Every structure is written in structure tokens, then in C-alpha cells.
View 1: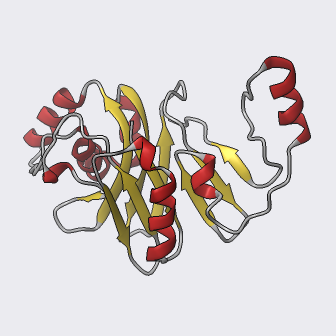
View 2 (view 1 turned 90 degrees about the vertical axis):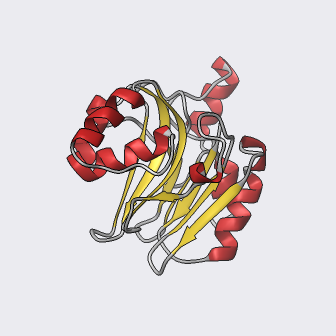
Length: 200
């Protein structure tokens, strides 16, 4: 498992603090990417490509598309073969990089051809968009907070709680947890803090 973090403004210290809170998800390293519009963070558990080439956040060749990713794409070798035939050049052996080039080639619709368990954020600096996605079954967690201005995401709620946001209990989620011992589609906090669903 890895840990992903990010938000829609620049703060290099805050993204490092989010990474620290998720250290247990990735003991093999951490990375950040910050520009004037976004801050992305990653805690790495190295599995496929153990070299520094697999470090995240990872970018395409001209640094216009960035990704922070947690998961495993089961069909990444087949996807990579097709992308190489289209002329894409890879610098690592990771499934992470396959997602970057698939986004470049097909846009957000590429996700319909991806098999696996995953949660990721792709930042397209030219279009200035953040594209977040998680797998269809929600195996890999992805939480986000949106108050109309601030957009924050993380693999765990504790990453988001590094920010100054209201902490108030969600009564329906609390009731669900007490009666069934789990919370299905909400979070325990009664704010704009949500569990992401798959769209694709």
C-alpha cells in the first residue's frame, strides 16, 4: 500500500505534514510536487520497480502531467505494449507510468480499460485540472474535502485533518457505525469530507 495526498494550492510544508501522517502506508520513501496551483504528496511502498525511477509524484516527459498513485494495475503490461506502439517512451517499469501515458493518449476515458485496485490523482498542468479516481470496488481508499474553494484529498482522513477544517460528528454515520460496525458511504465527520466513488 502507498499513501497519496494533495490540495489545490501551494504549500510545501503542509504537504510534507500530510505525508508524515501517512508514513505507515509507505516506508520506502516519500516525494512531493508543488507549483503555484497544486501540492501533491506520496508515501511509497515499492513493489514493482524498486529503483528511484519509480519515485512519486511522477511526471511525463515534459513535466506537464503528474500523478500520485496507490494501487496495482493488473493489465499494465498489455496497456504499456499498446502505448509503446503509439510512440510513448517509458522511463520506468512501473504501472504508475502506464496511467500517465494512458491519460495522455486517451484522456480521462482511459480508466474504462484499466483493471485493478487503485486510487490516484492526475494533475494536468496545461489544462489545470485534477483528475481523481479510485477502483470500482473501493479497495483502495480515497477521501476528499471540498468547501467551494479548498479541495483536499488523501488516502486517509487523518491526512486531511492536517488542515484547519471543522471537526463535527456526522450523526447518521455515527449511528451506522454503532449499529453495523462500519460506515458505508460517508465519513464520521459532518463536513464536506467525503469518501470518493468510482466514475468511469
